[in-house]
Length: 336
Image (cartoon, rainbow, N blue to C red; front, top):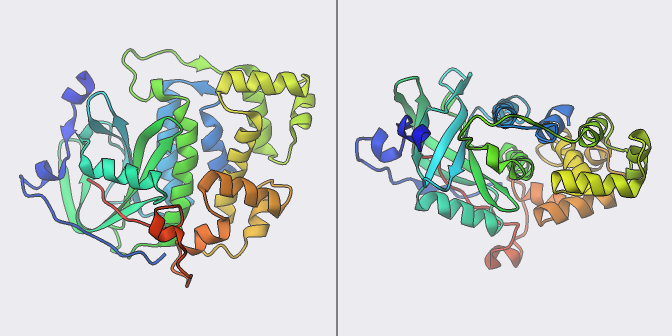
């Protein structure tokens, strides 16, 4: 609670002196080793410092690789019912420290997370205040749309990635938002194993991960085509013992972790229209398109071509899933 007591409130009601905006929901239109390294970084050393570096890297990667104009990540502090700042982008497009700001976790945030559970990967609202966080003040720099993409792990909400185009005033690019949704999904899987380091209370020591985990992760980032047998040979263990050790130390199977890294590489290689799915899947390390299709569908609840087509403004025929609340429909939301 000490950290929150020292934080500056950036709730909309506080910024606008009690006047709450009434944003309207917008209608929908539609690895690079960098992302793979980001997803795997927390496997090497589990500490508050390592997790914070991953959050900063995620903000910068979302701008440099996905090319979102301005982004910020807030974490869910369930104990204090707050959304706590980490890193963001200022009015000049630079990455800045936003650990000193927070806002109350409200119904709007719960709604966005509930929508995500039902298959809406991100939410966007129009006519929202656009702000930049300075050392001692929050400055209003305009009013336009703001997108929020939940970061969720297997055990529940972790945070939100917010983005806008306050610098250029450009319209929403749904191809970029779809890629950001995949980034947040992968980030949620990685951070879920490090929840105790999201809000450290006593500057805990870094806990070095098992050397086998570090070695296997490094090998997979370098070559995601390696099989479990290949990896076992490289670390001089039987395949069975390697699988057991990896699962015990990371709480995720070696196969699932390898698939996470391959998906991370895929999102950096596929174009916004999803026209090069096969090429991107093979370059990411999948042995065949069928394997990639199976992994992607299991991870995101929808076939890759449909996932991207439904989010890039291309013509598509509505399916029964859209009226039943299943993955495949898009919803939009806000940043506080």
